[in-house]
Every structure is written in structure tokens, then in C-alpha cells.
Image (cartoon, rainbow, N blue to C red; front, side, top):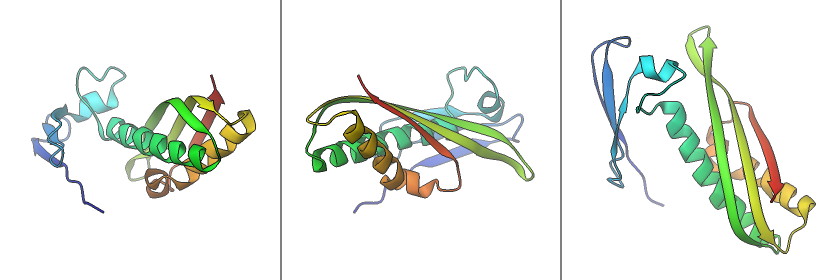
Length: 144
């Protein structure tokens, strides 16, 4: 399996500095980051590690869920996945305080219970969920 790469160039102090995150492998883009905007309610056009984790988690989860739905005999028509990744204080600065996954699906061949089981199994087995085992991850899953 391939290795993917990102790079951050940072200038200045935590409070005054800023940086740019580059998605190096895909060349999909370069995104601004800063701590003041990371800690603010309004991101103001910048991204953050938490938003990047949310993006990684939702895409990984959607892929895993589509595979598990198929294994259970269903056919996913559409999956809408969102993740809210929270940052909070810690004794050593900050930590991720929780991830709330939400998925709504249109699936042929599975009832609500079958979908719920596949959704829970995907939460437990997607590689990003496995990497984030130190963070509480909740799941809200239902069929549309």
C-alpha cells in the first residue's frame, strides 16, 4: 500500500505565527493554518488539524461503510458522512476531546438494523478510527 505525504511550513510564534499545509502526495492544494483561527469559532478561511482529521475520518469511514454494506448483502446508493472533531484543554496544553460521526444513508437490501450494525462495525474498523482510539468517537447512523 502507498504512503501519503503532507507538509507544513510554519513561520513565527504560536500566537503570532501562521503556516501553510500542503497536500504533497495528491497536489490537491495548500491551505492556511494559524493557532488564533484554530481556537476561534470562526475559522476565517483557514483550516486546522481538527478539520483535516474530520476530513480524513469521514472519507475513510464512508469507504469502510460502503464495503461492509456490500458484505452484508446491501447496495449503498448514497452515504452522507460528517464528523465534528472537538479541541479542548488538557494538562499539557490541548487535546482532541471527542469526535461525533453522523451518517445518513440510502441503501438497498438492508433494513435499519442491518445498516446500524454495518455503521457501527465501520466506526470500529476504519483505519482512521483505529488510529484515533485515544479519542471518544460517537456515532449517529440512520437510513434516509
